[in-house]
Image (cartoon, rainbow, N blue to C red):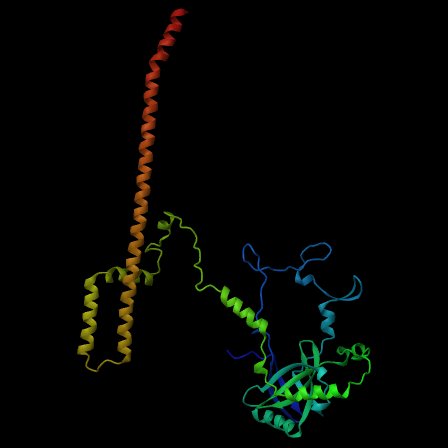
Amino acid sequence: MAPRAYWKGYLKLSLVSCPIALYPAASNREKISFHQLHKQTGNRIKYRKTDAETGEEVESGDINKGYEISKGEYIQLDPEELGAIALERNRTIEINEFVPKAEIDELYLNRPYFIVPDGELGQQAFAVIRDAIRQKGMVALGKVVFTTREHVIALEARGKGLIGMTLRYPYQMRDENEYFGHIEDENAPQDMLELASRIVEIKRGKFDPTRFEDRYEVALKDLLQKKQPAEKPPKVLAPSKGLESKRALPSSADMPPFRTLLTKMGVLTSTPVFFVLAAVFMAAWAFFSSEGIGWREIATMATLFMTILIQRAEHRDTQALHAKLDELIKADGGARNELTEIDKKDAEEIERHRERSRPNRDNRVKFHHECN
């Protein structure tokens, strides 16, 4: 999949302009990153935006930006206020001046981008601007708006395209004297300086970034490779509902007409006779065809043959499923019959006990009347 452009617009040099697209020249996407997981469940951890004082969750529409002027005191700015001062996105990088590359302090270099022509119409104009920058050996300076901020960008010819390097503003730079000012002025001894110079000459080489190795990244990949299971664990399916699955099977009345036709074909094609007749029909068609058989006829026969095989397999699976369910129903029916017989025997035993106790009760009543 082609990379997605970070920015699209126009590059303009005086009266010459062309459509361009910017792509980030560096990315951390290939770098290994981790998600936070719950140890017990293995599920991902999610963060919610809450009020620092009340602890209540806050909706995105109720959130403003704030600039802290003192501890716990902020100046709030709503999106409308920020939108009112946002710079207009004119989608054009206009080259204002050219400077020697050596005059650009490396500390100001921020982020590189690949710049390419966007479409075929601007190829020639893009080549004119690129070759003009290359011939002069200069770096072109312009301005570009990303999202809401304006950036100074330095353009330099590179291969068939351009490299655009955004530059930091002076207010973003720190004063080096704050860090180097305490270092004392000390002259190095001549003999030690000569020895260090000799070591530099011995270790001189060419810049080759392919020799750079991120050892921690390599160790992470090895660790993940060792812990990765050879096979994915099977998914745990929901427990079967037993006899309820029998009721869940669709009937022919619930199926669409085309599916009903395929089911009937499955029943028909499950017989060996039909299978043999189909094979004979295909062989006869191939033999008696007057114009020969082309790739279309072969594809048609192959499709028909695969349809027959699929319908036979589906019919066999359906028959096996119904047979299994019938066994479960029979087993369930037998268990219910046994329970019914037990209930009948219990009822008969209770009735016999009542019959045996009835004469004794009649005698007690008769004796009571005689005494009165």
